[in-house]
Amino acid sequence: MPAASQAATKIVTAGPPLAKPPAGVPQDADVDSFFPGSVKIHVGDTVKFERFGFHNIGFPKRGAKPAPLAMLDPTHPAAGVVDSLGAPFWFNGLPTPIIPSIVSIGTKSGKPYTGAAAIGSGLPTGPGKPKPWLVKFPKAGTYTFYCSVHFGMKGTVTVVGKRKPVPSAKSDAARVKKQLAAAIAGVKKLDKAAGPASPNTVTTGPDTTKGPVLLRFTPGNLTTTVGTPVTFEMTPGTPEDHTFTFAKDTKALAKDADATFVAPLPGGPPGPPTLAISPKYAYPSEAGGTVTYDGNNHGDGFLNSGVLDGISSTPFPDKFTVTFTAPGTYSYICSIHTFMHGTVTVQ
Image (tube, rainbow, N blue to C red):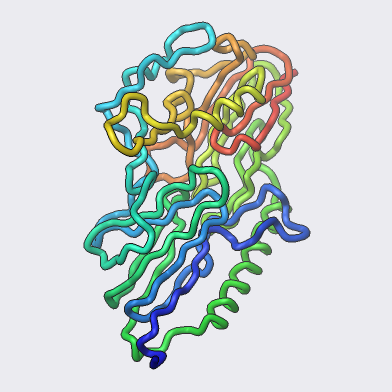
């Protein structure tokens, strides 16, 4: 069979294609990028997307914006969310953040894409490594794909006629190798970066806006004094979302967040489950104004910033300020990445 008539498959990974961080790379490093960031294929060829990390892949309808990770749905208000003392949180009655089905469930692997309708891989919510997701391209053009989980994470597929040249697999592999080397250098540089310039400030990361991130709090242990406001903030432009969530028992908190941060919507419509982000973690635990903490908030020491990001165009805030009113050492986590831990010692 002539080579020009044979369909080919190229591989793109969401996240760096590594089983574990290389030597010298911090264990909490990640890269929110596609590898390679662009591919060129022939009409009729297929791209196989593989995931290394919590990512989705989405191709929007031609001319439309990429699907967001979540949308506030006023038809499903938060209800019955109470603290450890049985008192209802202030955000009951506000919209529940719903994950669109094109993001949560997606569409069937192997489906052709022309831009006429949106397609998506769905989220990797099941056990084990997610299966590859394949897309066939029957029409020439340049198509942009996105990760809805990480703002700004995108790539392109350029589809050309069968007689036009496209890079070889060897050439694509060389580009991935070069991209990986740059990413590794980027996270190593972040690991050596200084902490926040302002005192009494904790930041996430540090991160870049173009892929390399550190899933940590900096500084991980902050010392302050009673009555001094402490600001917890995001790295500007980071592709990550985080929370700063305190509790007396952060192990139990992490277990709850892992089980409920993203979960099926109670009483959702028939068919595949509608996934929602738990209002308990999406919204700040306090209604606003001056936020104080003595380690006993809501009975179990629960204090939550709500979801924060570093993107000015989104509705989410980028910082959270707390005044500690009693001496002690207080622990917190990120309810999205529950392996992220920090402490504040108040003297």
